Image (cartoon, rainbow, N blue to C red; front, side, top):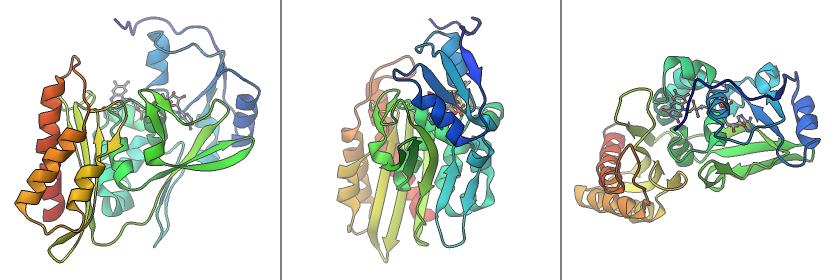
Length: 294
Ligand SMILES: Cc1cc2nc3c(=O)[nH]c(=O)nc-3n(C[C@H](O)[C@H](O)[C@H](O)COP(=O)(O)OP(=O)(O)OC[C@H]3O[C@@H](n4cnc5c(N)ncnc54)[C@H](O)[C@@H]3O)c2cc1C
C-alpha cells in the first residue's frame, strides 16, 4: 500500500533556465539517473511512495519560460508547450471553441489545484492508461515533439504510448510540445469520463469521439479510449465501420459494440473488466449522439 506521508528520498535538484541547459543535463546521464519534471503532481507522490526508481538528479522544467506557451494562430492548429498547465488548456477560449473535447478532458482531470500545477505534457508523459487528455489528443490527431542534443523528432500520438507508464521518449530526450492540426469546421468532438467519484479520481472509462459528417453520412469518425487497455488507443474497427456509413441508430449501436470488443480492460479496485467493457459501449454510443447534436 502506498504511504503518501513518507518523506521524499534524497536526490539532487536543479532548475535550469533554458531547454539547452536541461538537455545538457539529460545528455550527461546514460541510465535514466536524471529525470525531468514539470508540475510534479505525478512525480512527487510517486517518489514519496517509492513507486518509481529514485533519480540522482531531478530537473525542474518550470524555470524554462520558453516552454510556457499555448498558441493558436488564426487558421492554424494548436501548439501546447511543455509548461502549459491543465487549467490554461481547459479554460482558454480558443481551445473551448475550436478543440472543445480537449477543454472537456482537461477539466475532467483531478481538482483545480492539480490543474493549476500539472501540465498536459506531464499527463501524457506519465502514460497511465487512464490519462484523461490522451483519448482527446488521439482523436485530434496530435503529434508530440521530442527534443534531445541530437535535435527534434515528431511522434504521432498513437505511436507515443508503449505500455503502462511507458512512452517512446528516450532517456536523453524530453517533450517540448504537443501539436494539434487545424480542425475541419464541420467537425464535432466530445470527451466523456466515467469515474466512481465526480472529482479527484481516475477514469474507469474515458471516451473521446470526433465526428465529421457530410449530409446524412459519417465522413470521418475517430474514437479514442482510455482506461480500458494497457495504453490509451484508437478503436479503429469501430471507426472503419462508421466511415462512409449513413447516419442512423443501428450503425451507431453496432459501432459502439465493436469499440467495446476492441477494449482489453482489467479488473481492479475501481471496476471489473466486464463493467468497463459494458460502459465503453454505452459511452461510445452516447458520445457519438452528442457529437451529432452539437
Ligand atoms: C490527487 C491527484 C489526482 C489526479 N487525478 C487525475 C485525473 O483525474 N486524471 C488524470 O489524467 N490524471 C490525474 N492525476 C495525475 C496528474 O495530476 C496528471 O497526470 C498531470 O497532468 C501530470 O502533470 P505534471 O506536469 O504534474 O507531471 P509531472 O509530475 O511533472 O511529471 C509526470 C511524468 O511526466 C514526465 N515529464 C513531465 N514533463 C515532461 C517533459 N516535458 N518531457 C519528458 N517527460 C516529462 C516526468 O518525468 C514524469 O515521469 C492526478 C494526480 C493527483 C496527485
